[in-house]
Length: 286
Image (cartoon, rainbow, N blue to C red; front, side, top):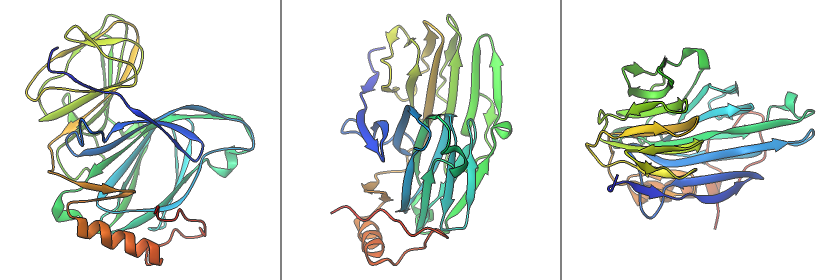
């Protein structure tokens, strides 16, 4: 497939948790509404340790956390306190401003555990950038699925493959988890304007072009390539309607530099909603 853009991720570390981040990159700033894509690499945590990200702010986006292994506790300035397990969707819309905490649940700290999953950010339409923040949790059992001819599809958010997720996305969105048995194939139809595939595990190709492991393959607009599994494989498919250029600075996403500057000043001054019961916070990078 000659028009396939392959984006190699950069390695990051967040509070001791290794991350691969293919989006944003110099080659591609966004795919549909997706402006940020983190692969939370499979990480064992021995007893007495865990992930702990102190409260930090967001504007102008929705965050979506989806785990394959492990559990996280989500707390935010709206008063949400939610345990997130494998296959659940944790969906937080920041609007004009929200703060949240993500950590290993306290009840798991005394035992060995693993964490593996994805976190993505979706930009909000400009009309909703200064809207009310919101949070919703969607258990794994509520997400639509299909399973046919060796292809399992879970529609995490948005619509696609004749499925529609209950997650309240704010613009046309496609976010699916794909699991293919060896030898299975799936047509990636052009039902959304922009699309990209990320190979989490296994071996697969797209119209004969091998997909590198842990890389984002951005599809040509209007193309309908066939995904073929060379071995049992696991992928994420993202896409949707582009929302136009967005600026990103630290944890802030906005359509104008003024909104970014205002958010930085507010967080630095402590003029921000606080997560109940939390005193630790991540300070603004210089």
